Length: 245
Image 1: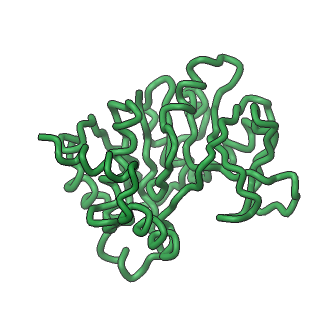
Image 2 (image 1 turned 90 degrees about the horizontal axis):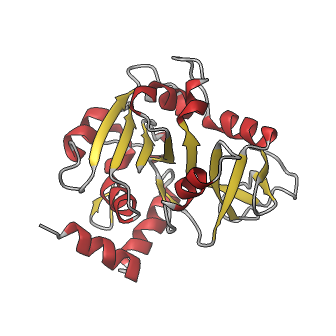
């Protein structure tokens, strides 16, 4: 099981703190965010992570290394000096990708089973992707997904159509063949791929039932810090996992 984490963004909304540290290394409840994220992935059963890095990527590499401390095998794909966007970064990582993999964002913390979208993709040959979605109704961010509960019937950013009452939760299972069709070196947004898969009727949905957390904004970072600092049962499990020899 392979998870790809897109962690190359500039994090301009979090400046000035991200002028000297990448978003992934910001302290959340006493440890760098990437440590929390890798613990979630490992607990879900993943054994390999591909970190797509760019801005201050060497700092992430120096902290995470080859994954020895996280119990994972960690590989790296570097966008280089020109940022390629989420889609371009994924295409750059093509040589490292498994036949089916999960992709998530470097600022997302999701209280659900990270393995579930990938398992659904492997078990169903009638789709090329499985998007985790949440019935958001505009509460946490702008809703962008229309779903019948089984399929993503449409994906569109910036819509005010009330039938779009779900949101992309932040974990997407994909087949490598989808990424292989993308133009190498071309910048772009993963949203375009998701929209096209939905249009083709090739994007299944898996519904999450707890709110998502993100550290892309100061408000989101503070909310996750409170959540994890509260040492909920979930946080206690992660804390124990970090203390294993």
